[in-house]
Length: 253
Image (cartoon, rainbow, N blue to C red; front, side, top):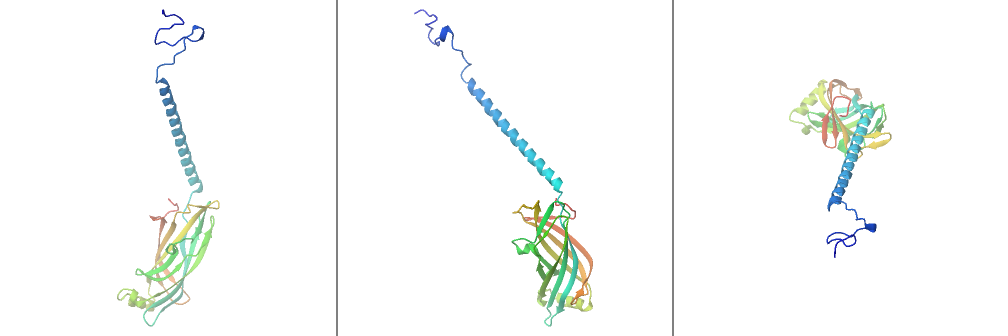
């Protein structure tokens, strides 16, 4: 049959209504490339949104840091009194001291909860002589509100046996006490703290502990006497979980 409008040659589609041919849309595979471009656009859009969100979060954290301006609380020994200190007949030394620690919170926005910890070692306070502990105590629990100052009195008790010191050390300590010579002591203080901002605790699962070591020479031991303290030096460290950081300024970081 001779090809005509209603008899197309083999391989051609029949014409549409009114003799019009059905339009052709490119070659096979063109649609798949268009779909690929759409997926790439969605992927790029998601990446841009994620990047913008991260930038906004970082900006918010930086702005919050500068607004809050966190500073470390300040800890100083405000008083040191001997309530009981005597050499026993067996050469051991019984002692009872009262230490007053002054705490200052310079922050306008941060509050501190002091003393709350699951580990008793994190709130221990002690007096050392030649690396041997003479007496010990514990930091009480209390709150340190914004821009406030608080003085806490703590009792330390202990008995130092003669054989707990090295050869001759107990005799030399007893001689110094009898002569009222200066005795070098180390006051070690561990102070666990928790941070609060706008009434809510921050980083509840993180361990924050301030360690304060105070070296000093002490004389005028005796019951009810105010100790004569000289050559006092303070070294402070900050523990975050197991990390250790010495500091001397006012900033946490």
